[in-house]
Image 1 (cartoon, helix red, strand yellow):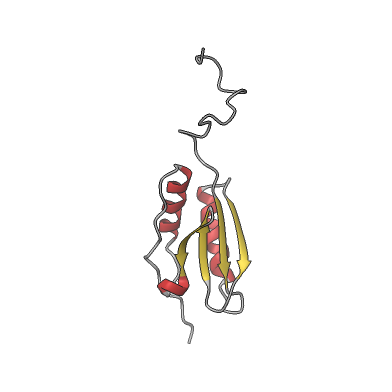
Image 2: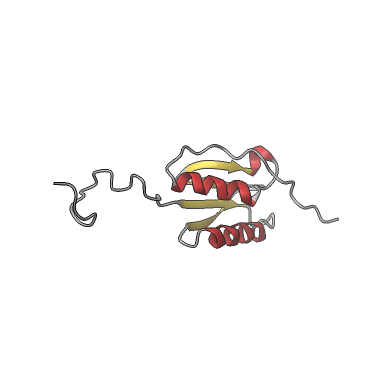
Length: 115
């Protein structure tokens, strides 16, 4: 009896298995530190790759640039001392969309210093 259509009466019986999962990203950053431009650049790269991604920003503490995917911290500038590479964040999003376990991003590029 289960050879029919996929619409309708699934009632949550693994309806998302095999399908891309919804991904929500929250980036918390220090505005007085000038990290808004880095957030905007990263958000733009994410939207270019995944136009349907939900990405939001929050103001954070001094030196913060923290990224959560679906509530899980995947990157911390406070821990790593730099900013994430776009390719690493894109890969983490791909994993989240596929339902794969997320790993913390440990690679980071140094923050720019203008003298």
